[in-house]
Image (cartoon, rainbow, N blue to C red; front, side, top):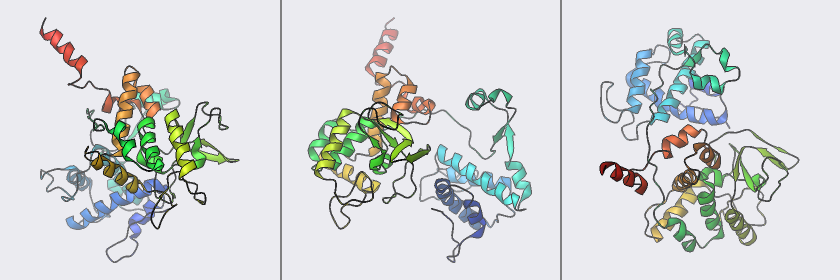
Amino acid sequence: MEYTVFDAGGEIYETPDRFLRTLTAGTSRTYAYMLVDHLRWLRVEGLEVETVEFFDLERYMGAVGAEVAGPFGRPWRPDREPYSQSGLEVAAACLKGFYIFQAKRGVNLDLAKVLDGSRLPTTADRMRTFLGHTLTSMPANPLAPRKTVRRRHPKMLPEGAREGLPGTLPWARDRMVVQWLGDGGFRIGEVCGLHLVDLHLRENAPCGECKAPHVHICHRELNANRARVKVKDPWKMERGVMTGGTIRRVSPAMVHTYFEYMTTQYPANARHGMLVVQLQGPHSGQPLSTAAARGMLRRAGVRLELGRIRPKEFRHNFTSDVLDKANGNSMIAKEAGGWRSAAMVDEVYGHVDVHDPVFVAALERTWNQ
């Protein structure tokens, strides 16, 4: 699947289209949206791709990340949320790649020289790279925002949600979704994107990659329900056996809800091979979308008078619980929840809650000395 950008007249915008064709499907989708914002800003500012300067790109990065008007002018996209830290990093990578690609075609060479910089490698760079001791430089992006380590406090599930939800869900499918979100720390796109061949729910599965029951989470661009997995670990199917992807262990309760759903509600004539399907309406038997799964949780939260329940709250609870049981070992939590790095786990969950009883008791003992 390819993504592109159209101009105001409905014709393909050739300049970004050539660049997007060089990218993988997942990257081209993200960069296409980023480029639409940037090209609209260029038009508003009266600038052209061929003549835009580095200072202009700095102004743009300041505008898309601004919450209020500042030195760079009014916020761009005032009707939407400003770009987050990670969003700004993606935008910086997109702009660098776009303008360096243009320079290879002989367009705006001076800008490309400024963007195509380098920096000294850090210890982390050397540890991640094969033969890292030979590194002398690393690519740098002058548009990238300064990285800041910030402590985030993720929103957890409302009290009593895990216990109350199964009783208010009449469908075995919905009880399975809740159980898998809670016990596996899955993202909603991972649950809705599962295929039956991804499930190895018996011990000593033929893939040979995990002896315990597990699933293979695989990124696919062409799922019928458009559900996509965030992590793109390579996977392959050989002789009907799935290998690779992100391997995630499953609990006995997850296996139980799976068999209850498959034996009572899963349509026998389903040919798409996906796990979670619609059970009612004109599209009965078709794969369930992530929007429909979110709607199911939202309605269940209203029935329980717990407010809105979001799928990511299950993942936050799961990771926090694993981290507590593992005595703060972020590597264990990383593997259990399929996070890309232990640093991310530590950043989000590895800090002390100021309301934690142990923390409060320690302070009181200190104050009473």
